[in-house]
Image (tube, rainbow, N blue to C red; front, side):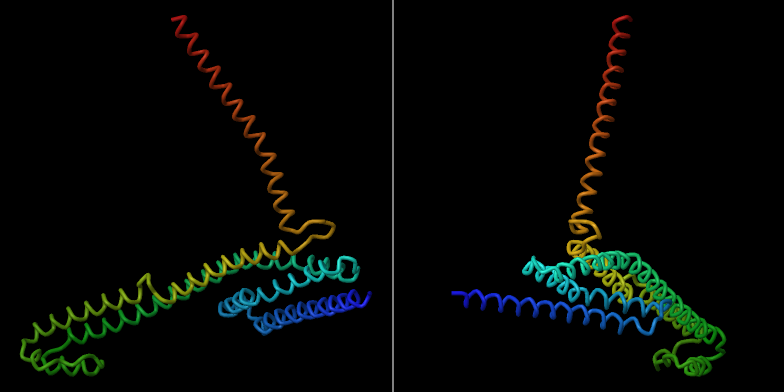
Length: 279
């Protein structure tokens, strides 16, 4: 009669062991992935910071799944003191994960600011090169003394050669035509270089929105599975309770202020009515 119970208990032990080892494997994979990205340290390098944030965001589901398995094992074995102690320890460590993912919010903003600065400097450098190049062409155009000289000067600067139909024009007409083409080229270059639809800028915006959204989500999820020392509730529950208590304290004060404003308005109306009657 006891064989089925023993078999069930054995399967339960095997399941608990498997889930525990799976959680450990997930935690180790998360740690190795993050450490592999962090080392060697290059805190002042924007690329290193971007890589670290991406590694944390991309690997966070591994740690979350491991934390969930730890809670599941503790639920399956409520009487095992060792498993319960392990759950409490890992739940306290998870508080650090909450803080870490919240810190990613300002770190990503700082990284985005660095990225935007790099793009702006790159645009300014590209625009300076284009402007200087245009100035060289303009000096060559202004200094030409003949059509042949103009052709040679442009060829020396590796610019577009004059077409046969262009060479039939007078030198002043050619200079005017080339100057107009040059100004149009400068305007086109400026529109492309300084375009708000720059792929680099949009890449920064997209990455920032992704990191801000997922960091907030992961912080809340880790908070639901974390627990402070001496607390019987999760960190998320504690935060919710404090929020509700703070709102409960503010509500009566608002009611008092509202009542005082009402009675003040009422007294003003009574005084005005008496003044009208006396007049």
